[in-house]
Length: 155
Ligand SMILES: [Zn+2]
Image (cartoon, protein in one colour):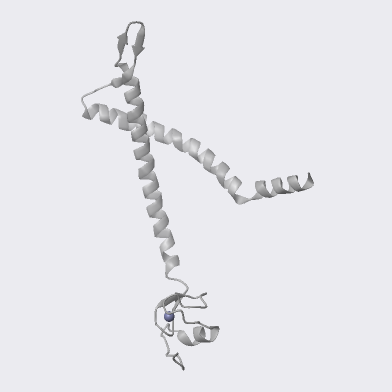
């Protein structure tokens, strides 16, 4: 039982759970924004463009049963609009993320002394020519100015 609580404590204190909670709360608030955007701005715009078509009242009756197909069409239109708005938001956020990650890429690279390809600085073996890159090679391969020096021995 003690182990159970220890595991539970670990689970709660892990970042994911808090991230998830924040995500749910932000998501709920975000839904309100998207709904307002769709209902208050985009829907009237579509109504304006289509000459004031309002599906919500459209229905037909068979005997005692009423088929409010207009409301169903409205629900579909709303879904498509919400999906479109979310897609656009995600596109913008992804674009921003890509921009922020860009400087990271150019950071710790150096040239393989054997094939002169760019290799991760932490690599101990070149992915292009499979040569073993020792720390010694690393020091010799790139000097302070970033220029490559030829290795003493070629294999
Ligand atoms: Zn190489």
